[in-house]
Image (tube, rainbow, N blue to C red; front, side, top):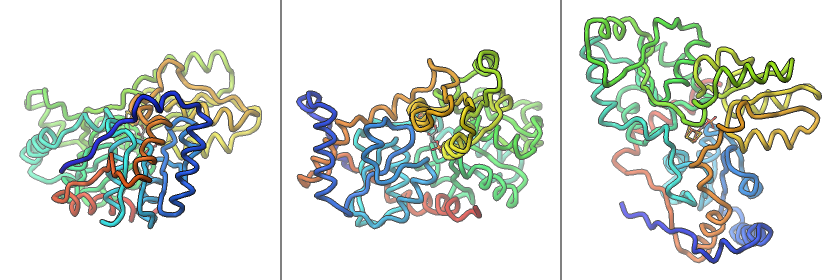
Length: 363
Ligand code: 13P
Ligand code: SF4
């Protein structure tokens, strides 16, 4: 498939922010309802200002499935734009203003390695576990789940997806994020000895076989480098310096951090919980910095701070800049369809089965 990839020319970098905003607004007005700009919560404020809809990956997937806009510009990372293309019609087109904005977590599981592990697990258990992939994954893994009776989940829908999966079979194979799988299963009451990480480098000896046979949840060993960089020491430091502070973290954080936080949940859950906090309350938040800084600005009557100032920046989300958005829109208004994200046709039907199953889960 040929994608027409294009990057902003250097002269755009001389524009002031006000001029960028003015030009973006002019093009948005010109397109009207034919254009929809979807923006993930981890994007910077200047992009959020231009959003028709802001959300976490679950909310944005739903929005993509509902819209009839002809052009959808996705300010997020590649797997999100890909899911949007999956959920829209052949007449609608999805664009990612910087085609290089990927997700390092999604890159940690490839179809070859997952298929090999799946076959090994089948040999050991003489059964087919239910495959569950986090939406932060490549499309061929979503198609793999569709082909094998599995499902896609987001951090908002992971518990419902796991409940559904365990109703089908006693064993679940979850990829690529080990922390999301472990944290949500632990919250659901699954014991640590029923959770095993599939390490492709580990020799398949008698002990590994026993653990796989007894496991209810087999995890891939992927992680998000942003959320894995929050530590127990960060919680201890904040609790010591701000007595009474509430700690709230995303489920991509390590188990020890999730266990010792006061609250754990998806991006939307974090926003809801902090928004419902009392004036005067203090919150230490373990997730991407753009969202945390925005919450702090939105609620000046409470203290909202990052769990760790040094961690917490998603470098690939940051690859979508206001200049990239402006350039994308200028290209579209000139009829130049650059940076379009297209789902490979041979994977579409199977991937859609697994994503639709997620959207159909009871709320
Ligand atoms: P949400 O599902 O909460 O939007 O998270 C997406 C993500 O990439 C988190 O790192
Ligand atoms: Fe991927 Fe982590 Fe960035 Fe989310 S925060 S897009 S999981 S690298």
